[in-house]
Image (cartoon, rainbow, N blue to C red):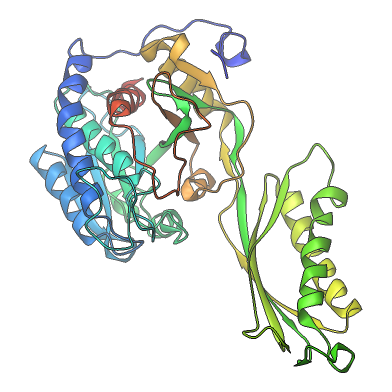
Length: 421
């Protein structure tokens, strides 16, 4: 990835968004407190919809900064904050929303840091502690800015890790303002970020259109007839059928869609039997399918059923499929993304803003916000200077830790997006 100079969104120069002269100084002063909050949250991680302590820290910090708070959303742990515009005539303007997710993962931490998780089997392995700390810092900075041309809504969301907390907030009217179930003015556009281990620290990256994939999960039970391992002809072996199903499913990507389209079908677990000399009655397969286009998503599901059922039947077994539709494609609105690039470039400098070269196949429930208002999701660099991208711990690994050196960049970018007229 290189600078965005050649990207069509950046052929014209833009002036820096209007910011108070002391904003960078404010941001610099909040990086330390933001790190302290991040370390505190890291010590006390909470799983999806269990973020009671985290939500309490967020609400306390927002209220101390003079930010209006609405807590108890999305099952009890979602928190909204709100700052009104201060520029005359802008009181009724649409709000700019900034979002952070708060939940941790069921992983045992192996970082060795002095602020490592104190909750057995739970850790912030995806950097949501950093996201939350940066948005708290952003709220504290913006509360000290006298010239705010836009109202700002701060969205602290539970349950990104599979719990669809973003959808739940949208369903409860978090983007609709006080009259629709949220707070303050209705949201006109929304921005969110995610720390990214392979993007250099101090930089941000994004792209128009699809950025992250749609996520669908499957649970398949291959049922046959068990028997003695020495007499397989008297059984209907579901292990052999499962092996055929796993292999055949790869044809969805290799033969079912265009070579220039994107689809991933991964079987992540296989469970069968408990003895070496017994053919079991059944085999359970679980996994995930990732796609970047609605048409491909529909095709992948259709082909999955056809392939799995036919492959199992051909070997004398049957496939019982439980399909779990997950997050939609995280698609960046063209206008919101252009705005992000222009503001980030004017704020950070062209060399610190990158065009993400291609969509990733991870999923994000930020996708739900984009179904209601123009949205742009961007990536915040975490890769330490001089580090080998292939050697650093990745998201969802027990050794992953958010890079505190990225906090100032995240706060400054969020502030700039909120203040740009």
